[in-house]
Amino acid sequence: MNIQIFGKSKSFDTKKAERWFKERRIKFQSIDLVRFGMSGKEFDSVLRAVGGIDNLIDWDSKSPEITLMRYMDDKRAKEDKVFDAPELMKAPIVRNGKQATVGFCPEIWETWE
Image (cartoon, rainbow, N blue to C red; front, side):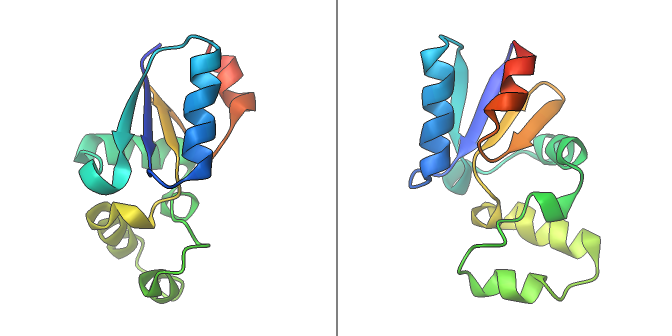
């Protein structure tokens, strides 16, 4: 297993995900989503795995950009905006090869073992 956790330093769910993998002694790579973001290939892979950009956006964020994105119809424009501003993504994003989850999803991670 090659686990990557893209998270935010102040995200409670990111800390829970890291603890979940540590408790099971599963090695993972932790990446600060806001500071480092994702590569283009990683972003495309996650989009395919989670079912599109709307599942990746943190709709509960207080950011004014989220309010504007609710009214955007152009999917590609949303993807570009989120790729350029990774703080708009829901955290954690956990990748295992071509599989990925958004948020705290231990029931899915168990099937990866």
